[in-house]
Length: 139
Image 1 (cartoon, helix red, strand yellow):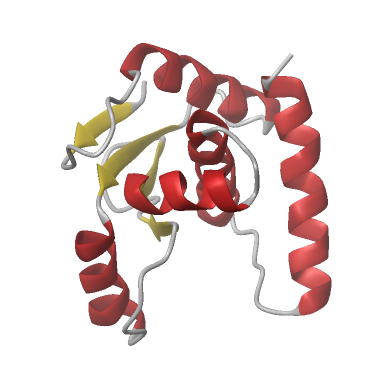
Image 2 (tube, one colour):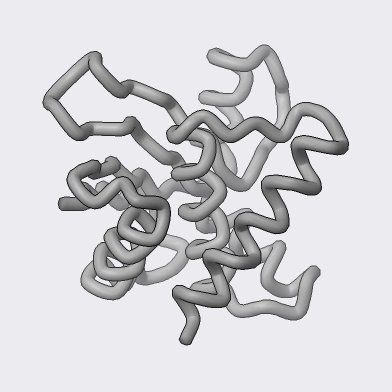
């Protein structure tokens, strides 16, 4: 079960498709009985979260809030995604907005499961894992 909350009006969110792909990601990561909450927002909203919780006064594409064991069994946490950033990054990286959003979901879930990307070594390992998952999701 994936909970979705849309707080933005930049782009229509395909909730059924996102829910289905999110659950497929969780299954690939062997977190079958787990679920997450997805929040779709704009740059202003995610910048406020970034400043408040991470002391970074800038926009970002995705923020994960691990909440495992704090609420219902199986709940991993919340992933906040800036759709506005997905639109700009899609143009920058010659990708689709939908693919950017799925990438952010994969990235967010990995963080909720304990993956880190603070060092170059961690980042490379995490990016490889993301790419393997994306290949399975997009087929």
